[in-house]
Image (cartoon, rainbow, N blue to C red; front, side, top):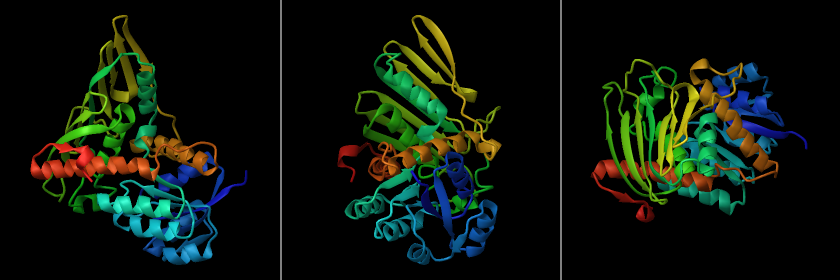
Length: 343
């Protein structure tokens, strides 16, 4: 099978690692870059030896022959670029969060379906090595029927230093890390029936919320509590690790610091090392996340090659977007949200 030609739309912070992950996988050829500020695209083109650079994405689509598009621009531009790509019959990969509103996300899924093009969202958190191990343990029913879980992402990491635009968002942590954490809850425990959320803004220098607590009743009958914070200062900084506690009828599973998983049953406790692979190009502060980018992209590539169906399709991720905006609705109204009626 020949290499698939693709273009990257958006050359900000995450594009560096998205491109490096594609190069790690192989089987693809990056032929063009687009960025609204063309000089940024030119700098990245030199770094990755990309032959063509554009400051107009329509012009790129007119001139370049590509097999798929990888959209890594700001969230407000996702819908327009997705539609422009889809109308040309080109498969679309879009960075999370898919869209700024649920109705916009629905339109993106609809336009790709109507144009009969594959649509994927680059939701990589579920592809972290510890999350894949947790999923396997749950599928093996090591701890019986799940009745309670807690998913924790609480940190004081200065995320605004390398992504200053995040401080200007009216809605922050639920759309940023919440998209990942709520998708992880879906991946591990299935869909939610009801949801209740409260939020807070602790950092006085930002506009949006930096703390969110979401309580969900899942369709499998269990309760899932997801907590997120960028205002939590602890003795040991955990970024970007997620801690998870799962309780079942026959025991418990705990994902602890540094990728250690403890499985406790009546037979005792087993310790599992679930550390991720290491890549020379990864930022040490984000190494866990950057490794998951490789696996998420690999899964999407296999779909594009016709080898299997990818997990993070647009249609699947629409349910994660629904959870995010249901959480905001709950926080605004201080009420329980039934997901079946949240459209």
